[in-house]
Length: 484
Image (tube, rainbow, N blue to C red; front, side, top):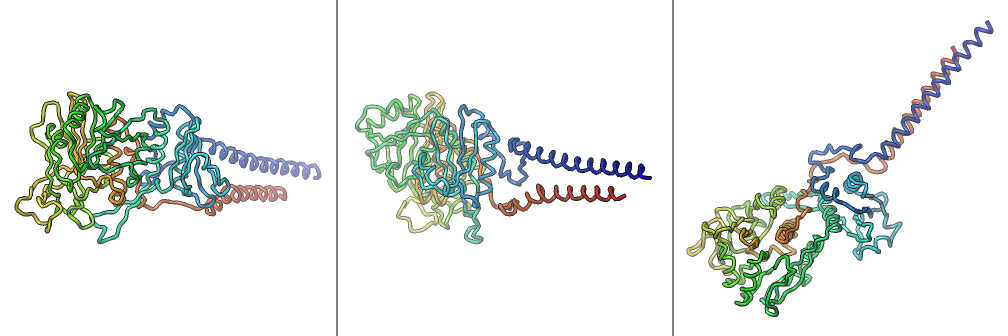
């Protein structure tokens, strides 16, 4: 009897030891799997199931990242406990895309002087500082990672404001800027009563050009005999007076040599025969009446001269904006007419157009009614055109309104005006504009999110409580078997 009892006890002990060992092995395997999962890039462990692919990286960004030839650190300047989940997920996606990219969180409260060695900007929580191994850097403010847009057709009835996440666009643009060796030079003319883009009144536009690695220089055409050889493009911004005959010849020579010209004219400044004569030779002429568009979908703020034109879907300048349903705003504009008989080798793309119900008021700024009157010009107008000449490889963008470069109007357009302008400059300089090809993500859909407390709770459940229950069950089974 004693022998049999001893044998039974020994067998129970062995079974119990095996159970404990099995539980320990299972826990160890679970821990190892968790550790390995943490080491795997997030692109293999996290999947974007959001309806509008909020956390998916675009092909444009992948192309930029694929060309990295030096290490980059993305410093997430965020205070502990107030992290923006969407930004954090985006930065993790960048880190997982390339061994050249590393993400590091820096709490401004813990490291108050860290960012000062790279930027003079006032640091906003959840902003991003991008630093290359060669020491160059770019600061992306939190408020540049989000945008809002008004649904003009229904805003006065519903008050609907659409919010968008544009973080990928901003960060990829900054990385592209740091990697770009080509710095085009754009000369803006002076001496004809032009608006001075560098006056401080157009800071968003100047900052935008700097962000796209474009250099601005002023040019007094009366003091030179030719357009500088390093000019990638020439900008004429709303001149109040016409150019001189010698200056006209300089511009024509610049274009015939393959130069690019960007012209913004203001309706209130009237006719500029010599300057407009250059575009007329390419088949584009101006109507100097103020354009009214009675189609309610083509104007904003309840004012039919606060134009909201259609964007071309066939040109790189406007294609991405049109696809993302952005709206350029161009109040107080005159119209452009394109000839049906263009010179050989010349093509004209209408970038911005009114509806076919539009008309130009001959009274200009002296109008007393929005209704059409005798002398007004009826018909569909272009408000911006791209002229290309295959014979010379030169080109012109003509925008029939100086409000394109206006901070208030740009704010009302949710930066669509700024994007149009930057696209234009980059296109005319032969420079691809990555940031404007990356679409924003709408925030109107609700996404599953959890704060740090919730995350900690579920971590404790899955990492602590569940394994403890499994261990307890093993112990109970062992005790019961031992008592048999």
